[in-house]
Image 1 (cartoon, rainbow, N blue to C red):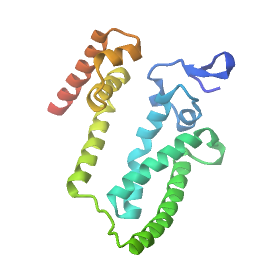
Image 2 (image 1 turned 60 degrees about the vertical axis):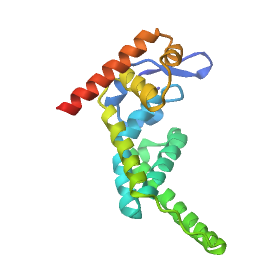
Image 3 (image 1 turned 90 degrees about the vertical axis):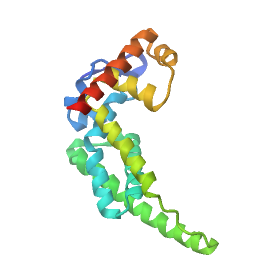
Image 4 (image 1 turned 30 degrees about the horizontal axis):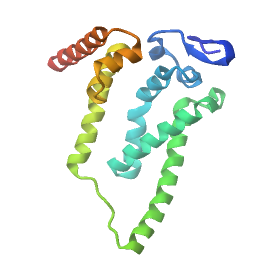
Length: 196
């Protein structure tokens, strides 16, 4: 059993350690079961840039690389319990998924191009502004990486997902003032980091 995860009645698993996932090896992160989203979040953050860079290099298309990166991590999440550390590193496994998604995308692209030609529709190209907005969101997410988990989650929920303090407090089973403090502390840390 993965350390930091304990079995409950009925075989369900639950989180038993705080932010200890950041130091864990990839195999442990992938072995964590449902109810421990922090584990896959750490895995994602650890490998996101490398996968995106690889796919951007292979495709020469930032928008396609962003889409494929999302597909790679969705497939990795769904298949995480099938990862076998004795067969190779998690990074190699992840890049294998990326290679398969790239092949799928190229096949799909050929079919889509044929359909567009048949219908007389031009391919949509993302504007520079749309790509810059996506890159800014990626940069903002990276800035949150250094925050304590509770502050990061509170800032994401409040600022990115525009949730109310009351809804967030109800979900977390704490007072709205606690959520306000977490958001405030997180934003203060980000502002301080921006001045450094």
